[in-house]
Length: 455
Image 1 (cartoon, one colour):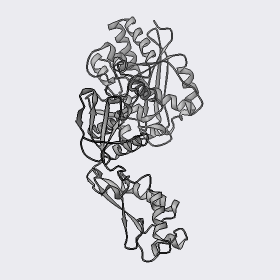
Image 2: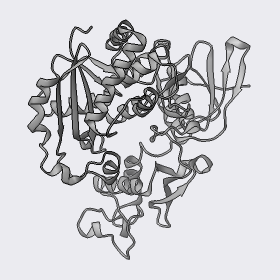
Image 3: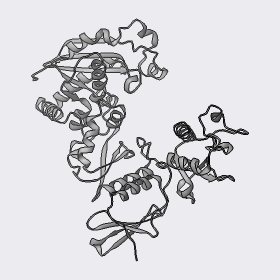
């Protein structure tokens, strides 16, 4: 039936991701014309203890791995065993990514053709649930020890034999051909969904099997950007996790890139997807707030506020997700610009600050440096992180396409105007948002001419 052997592969890992993720057991069963012709199986010492939850899942304990070979000791034999065969696994990108990475660390190039049994099951059996456990239960496959590499790999071989018996050799062969052409696609996302994505600007949303949003992204070309996520899945742990858990991809087209940027920011805050940590809205942020003391020196102190409700934006000289990040920023600029830690809110002492005694502060804390000189240096140090004062006397109207514009005031988008529909005005929520501020600030810098908005 096949022009090359099939090697059914399963691995167990220590539960880590990225460089921390290591194989602790591997099994490979080589099959030719439906018959098992060779086997490779081994425990693998990961070089560190495995967590209790891995032991509970697999039954493998640390003592089992003490005398097991390290991966480098079996790499040559494993690479030779897999060479020239079709690599078959359940959620194949997962097993492949671990083996590929650990072989690459030792100088082996490993780029086989891949065949995923999840995708085979989804293609041939229009039922809900395509996990290995579901397949075993659905087809009555006898397994001695679940979550052990050899038994799970053998279950995959039995499943493919069942699929051939029930649907014919040609159906399985065609599925293999299709998969080798679309090898980077995730196992649970229909090929037609990706095929139908637009090559246009907009926002895309990865969703799990319940429709819950996993990730929101934006691009000037939705289809190409989505495909790049899957291409990177075998090398980047986050992309791998997202690929394996995604079941659908929805999207919203926009006319322009700036609309996509703004929509992405809004959707992340609305949907709170698990993989968009950076853009997810926090109720309160740590703000660096400016003040002037009785001697005319600019001071900074840190307070927690909901920035969208904070009124004195001109006094905000930095916005951070935690007090630790705010403190790290202050420590950095104090060192770089010879600022005073007392005036920057990091030291409480009488008289001069400690850095002045080390000749690292110019003495603003005791009036040795003029307030004019010191304040100018603070302003320069925090220029990029502070909230810029609204630079216009009135609201402004800014074009974003040939037929659309947005009206902005105090860094807040008041509404959108669509001139193609008789100047239809769409109101936008009037609330300051840091991410929107950053997008608008960069966008306005690129505009050659800004015009005031008049009713």
